[in-house]
Length: 79
Image 1 (cartoon, rainbow, N blue to C red):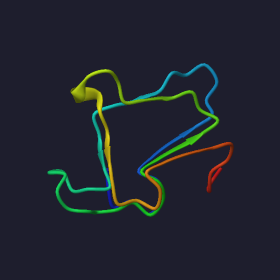
Image 2: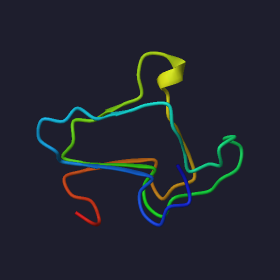
Image 3: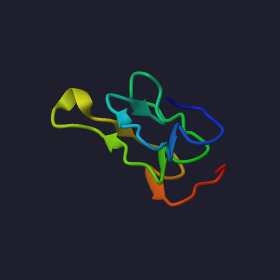
Image 4: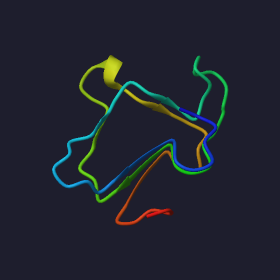
């Protein structure tokens, strides 16, 4: 997930939803070796209860080269 003009992944407040963000390469090309940043955060959460990552290596997210890695805020640009 890379090269976007804003956030790579953006999860905004959605009552009753349980979003899970797992197994992504964010802000890098698919091989994970070269930067291709997003214009905003790699992951942006706004009033969200989203789960990021997990308890095993397959659930990890690799986040690099973005304006912020993971941004958690009550409001985000574009809200």
